[in-house]
Amino acid sequence: MLDNYSAKKAGVGLQATVIFPDGTVWSGVSGYASHEKKCPLTLDHHLYIGSMTKLYTATLVMEQVENGTIALDDPLSKWIDLPYAEEITVGSESHQWYSQLHGRPLVSCAVVWFSRKAMATR
Image (cartoon, rainbow, N blue to C red; front, side):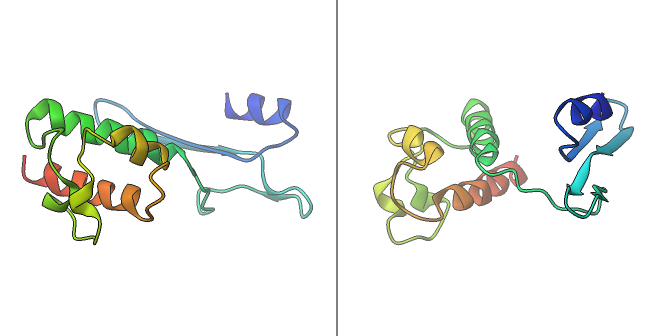
């Protein structure tokens, strides 16, 4: 599947990993890390996922809300130590910090940290 898609997209580099319910792991690559050098992509290459982290952050946070680990009205200061964290709650501005419209740096990174911390206490 990766080879077919890469071929249709002029050799675009693709990496994929699937973890099956039984714990079996499959990883595959296709395409080039560098078209100019005709350097094939390998699993050792690091790719940037950019804004996809917002999806993961939102999913982790809402999972914790469902589990009762955090509440939508919790201030971020309950979980992270940033100067402006008292001003932002999980629910009131979640649409802003997930979409990075808040104008405040590091919130998405911090939210991933507090999501991990909350998950560790489950």
